[in-house]
Structures are given as C-alpha cells and as structure tokens.
Image (cartoon, rainbow, N blue to C red; front, side, top):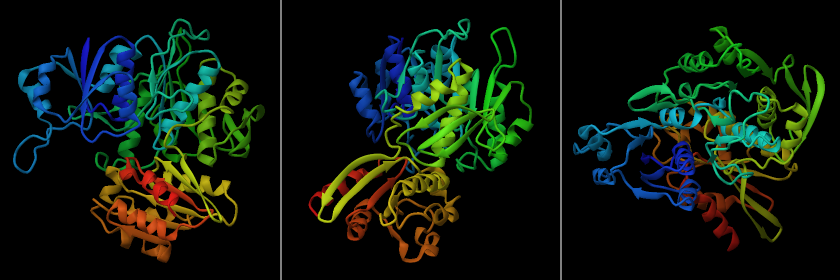
Length: 475
C-alpha cells in the first residue's frame, strides 16, 4: 500500500516509516521544522519528505493517511486550521489511522512483542534488549525512540522465529510510550501493542499537558498490564517491574494476571552488586553474569537489570545477556560526545543528552559526575522544552536536579514561568538566557580547560552543540 505519514519526523513515526518501507510499502510523509537524526535516516531510506501540512498533499492519493499525535484540530488566531491537510482528509472522508494502530495491524501481529514502558529509560532499555537478542542470534525486529548506535537505524522488521517460543513468532521490541495515541484516540500508545513481555521500568508524574495526576498515569499503566497474557499453551506472559517504585506496586495492586519478575530492590528476582560501570548480576541472589561497559549511572544499572529480565523470558540466559551488554553502545543523544576541543591547559568536552524531566536531568548529571575527577567541572546547559516543563509543573525540582553540576545555564525562551526565580536558590551557580546565542555566550565566558559541557534537551536545542564547538575551536 501507499501510506502518507503526517508528522513523519517524530522518533516513533520515523521508525514506523522505516518499517513500512522495509515491508515493501510506498511511504511518503510531511512535517514541519525537521531536524536530524530522523530526517537524515528517512532521506537515506529514500522516503520523500514534504515540508508543512498543506491540503494539496491529497493529490498524492495514498491508500492510508497515518496520523501522528502532534496533529490536532487546532485553528490559528486568524481562524485558519493549523493542519489543513487533516481538515481536508476529514472533509473528503478519506481513510486515516494512528501510528500505533497501524503498527498493531501491520507489523506486530504474529510476533512475541516485548514492550518497554516507563517515565525514564524507555529508549535505552529498548535498545539494550534489542542488542541482547541480536547477540543471542534471535534477529529481533524493533522500534526505538532514537537511533541505537549498535544498529544505526531506529527500526527494522527482523525475522527469525524464537526457538524458545516458535508458535508465537519472532521477537519484536518496542518502546511503549504512555503519551496519547492521536487527537481522535486519547488512549496511551502502548495499549495498542499487546505485549507478551511488558517492562515497567519506573513511573513518575510527567506529561502534565494530558495527565492531571500520577494516579491518572498509573491507571494507564494498568491498562497495559491488562493486555499481557496469563498462563496458556504458548507459555506465560511476563511483567518485568522495578521493585524500587511504589507507583508500580500500586499499578500491580490493581490486578495482575501474568508472571511477575522484579528487579532493583534488595529482595528482587534480579539485583546488582557493584558500581554501575562494572557489576555482578544476581538472579535469585546467585551470581548469573557480569556487566562491564562504558555506561554510567545507577539508572543504567537498573535499565540493564530490566533488559536482562525481559531477555530471559524469551530464552536468553542472564549470563549471555550480561556479556552482550558489554558491547552495548547506547543510543544517539544519550550522553553522546559531540566533540572534544584541545585548548591550552586541557580539553573541553561537549555532550548531547535527551534529558528533560528533572529526574532524568539529575541522573544524567550524577552519572557524569561519577566518571570525572574531583577537579573536573560540569557545566549543565539545558532547555525545559517538553510540554510538562513549559507548563512549569516541575520547576521547583530543577535546583535539586542540578545539584551535582558546578554551573547551570537555562534557556528560558517560550516558558510560561520565571526561570530566574525558579533557580534563584542556586545563587551564582545558575544563569538564565532567553535565546540560544546568549546562552552560548554565557557558557563560553565561564568555560575553562578540563570542563564538561553537558547539553540537555528533547529537541534540537538550536544547534547549540555545534555553536559551542565552533567557538571553542577558535578560543
């Protein structure tokens, strides 16, 4: 079929486009303000990208329009629709569906789906599980909300049937987002995926634009739990749950019909002994493997335990899984070093990270701090860009999230709250600027040899990484 994807450059929809193309479908798509890495990946696949959402795209005459969740019925101040193509589709009565629904009907059926849910770590953990299964020879399909550096693509169909569960079909690992599906389907995306293995990595309040409370999100997570099989002729469904999270305990308390495997807490099925970069994996308290890798931070140690527990469900031993993680290269924009510039007195390193929720910012900064010497400084440069952060729902947590940074630089453009006031408790450790160029100037004024410039945003951040590196090279 020919599908035309509205919002094709989002991480999920871009992955869907790659899968559809690999399956032999004709794929076109449109978006606004496209940026790498997804735009580069799509062009490399030969997928035509159209800028904007003009109604003239009806002339493409696709068999199906696949609608991303950035599309809405919103009208601009002058009364014109923000997404005229969507209005034209509705007016003409043409077929349309959501991305998750299309995935469920055209990709996931007949597969052992491993879905990874959680406020933090979904992308990294999905990539970890995929790499473990790849190293075990299972050739999994996957859709990751980023680009895993072990694969250099965000999605593929995969193919091999799993010898452990041949009747269920090949494995497919998917990042399972709790954000809503589309403007016409307000259920969380992950209810469409029908996993046999569901990973509940953690659960905090987020997405303040669509959820009123943590309890609302817990209810959505329980909807996911309801879709996991119990015991049957094809084996048991499994829920892998972080034993440290009270919120997830409340989710399971609402009812669980599947096998449960826990990780992280002192009394769990899977625990760790050692530092995050080098630790022993314990299965029911007994040594089962060792992970030695370049990743840092307690959050990645927990992600690893979740991945090992999920892989065990499809027949990969903890020992094999732990060994595979030794060659795991993480995901682009997860503590990715964008460049290092040698200047008189030492190097200055620039990083790119996707962190935007205060807990993610804190764990990212803390993970970097563990790797550095006592005299090396962290300059945290961040953009509160997510809908939740723009609303100011978590502004009070920002000073806590930046405790381990030596200096913090906040981009305040587009915020409905006073960033200077929110960070005032940090005193002269915090700087605020209304645009990226001013932020770069502030950071460059403070940067000195040996510093680590950690840029954190869930968007392109105005190309700040290249701007910093260019100025450093001329320093």
